[in-house]
Image 1 (cartoon, rainbow, N blue to C red):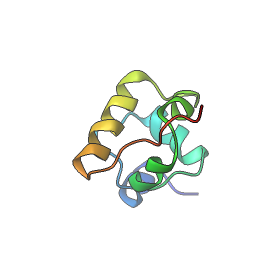
Image 2: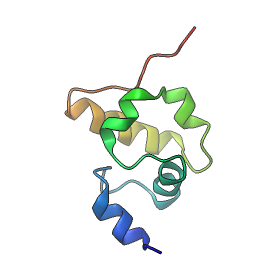
Image 3: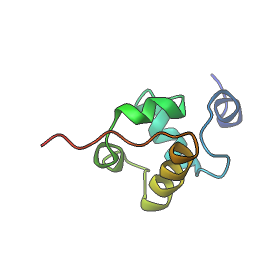
Length: 74
């Protein structure tokens, strides 16, 4: 079993992303920031442990790489 610290080193999520958000992402199978460009913000908000602050941090990290969350399907 890997520790939360090991998980943090293996991912490229923002360093200050809270542990509950990291666990939510890991539990959903996300390990890299670029993977989040294939999922909508609304879908991520549904994950237990993913709050508005975490979403904002992820949005900023994606934007810094020229990426964004996927568009909502209508």
